[in-house]
Image (cartoon, rainbow, N blue to C red):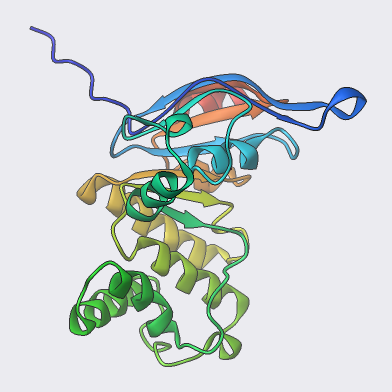
Length: 241
């Protein structure tokens, strides 16, 4: 007997996103279908302006589609009101943006502790978890520094630690290592690999870097708002040449 395939954690069906109307109408995504299971580490690649970031925002329920549907852990986001949608984002999605949006008056440790405390962790638990994450990302000696005393790359790693704090079901990263040097980008991707393998967290990153993409399980390549290739990483990179 063949085991049933697990339900996708992220799924889109005929996903369309349109901006503007009339002569200014611009269809950014054209009927995108995809399914990403739990524990998969997936890269989205494609040229600038191809719709990668738009797709990420829709996958994370930060935007609503013009047509089609997005399902997060089986829930159709189109059927959720704003409060229910916010609850799904807060409980199940961790976001990593190109801009880190740290609270400037709080230390690196305190920034990472915040989502843990909001989620009900004790101060002791939050401090231990935040310290461990920052240590994994090479910031164990910077816990007490405010963002203004950290480099841009260090701030980005604090933001990454913050996004991982509550162990979200899904981690979405829009060029999460774009501002990092090779050593620290490698460190971040090592953490992602570990989370996917050991914690079964689903990780989807937009990246232009083929070396980083090569460390994922799967690549989705998007061009002009359509998925033009989708498969195991090695096979897609070979087809890309």
